[in-house]
Amino acid sequence: PRREEVDVLFEETKEAVVVREGSDSNGDKSCAEDGGRHIKQGLDTLTFASRLNSMRARSDLWVGASLDSPSSLMLRMAQATGITHAFLNYPQHTEGFSKETVKGWLADAGLAPGAICLRYPERFRRGALTSPVEDERRAAIELTVEGCEWAKALNAPEIVIWPQFDGYDYALQTDYDAAWSAQVASLREVATRCGAHGIRVGLEFKPTDEKARYSFVPSTAAALRLVEAAGPPHRLGLVLDIGHLLAAGENPAQSIALAAAASRLFGVQLNDGPSRLGAEDGLMVGSVHGLAALEVAYWMRRVGYEGTVYFDTFPWNEDPVREAEYNVRRFKGLWEKARRLEEAGLAELLRSHDAMAVMETIEKLEMS
Image 1 (cartoon, rainbow, N blue to C red):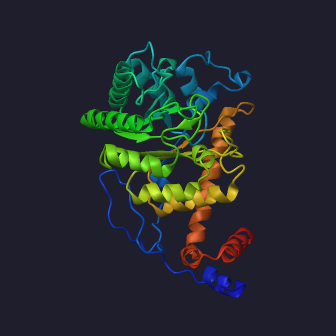
Image 2: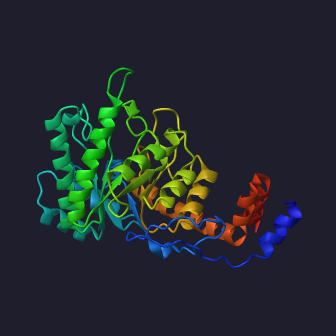
Image 3: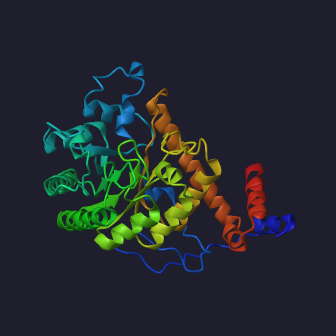
């Protein structure tokens, strides 16, 4: 399209039509086959959470009780306007405390439970769900199922598994077939047993980490293949972390679309960074990849994403409360901008693969 044709599209917007094949029991929606119409998605379908451990930063700005306690972290995070949910690391945030005690902390802070996030202890250094030692693998499975029991007790809908130790560092170090088979079998058991508690399981892959330079699940495609082999969509899906996707060399919006098309998109964790190999900077949302962040918001609307948006950021030098509040505002702004782009006819432009027309549409929108 020429510039004048873009102007016409912008001014004479047609009403978007919702076209969906149907939803599964989780509310996950697949993309319309024509790829051209967008769900009228409002912010009222979303809730927001931030990384609890980030609340330890800049303790000089905190006047409450010691931030060594998860209860104090919750109280501090609750000060951030717009943050309504807390994601708890298991077992680190619950160790030594009863379920009723932790429920009381959440109530005192006025926060709802978002999820239980598995953080496998160092004893699983050789691998958790893929350990070559059967007893270690069994212990990892049992720890994961305990996390589901905590999620049920706290009324959280899911657990999130980050397989930090499930990988390797060197060529000729591991048997890939055995590791894959172990991970499929482990996740299948976890999904089945957690499903009995009414808890779904989200896999948060990361392509590389200092604990495992090469992950057994290095990409969204590999993660989808894994969950499809291990369990049905209503029990087992993906939680996509933007920093992890950037580290994998992926376009985050495309990864979101891919997972949603398979009815496996359980969650999105937002952050940003320069995406150097092996780095996950956890910077403020959209602070580096602004256009990519806008596209993420656009595709979250397009696939009908509902639920909690989690800010997985690392404000080492910033006030973590202000940083969390900024992330909420920034994402809401991106969400609204994506809505305006839909009304400006972006779907038609995407079908034409015309990057220049898209950039001119965004330019006109920003000037209006």
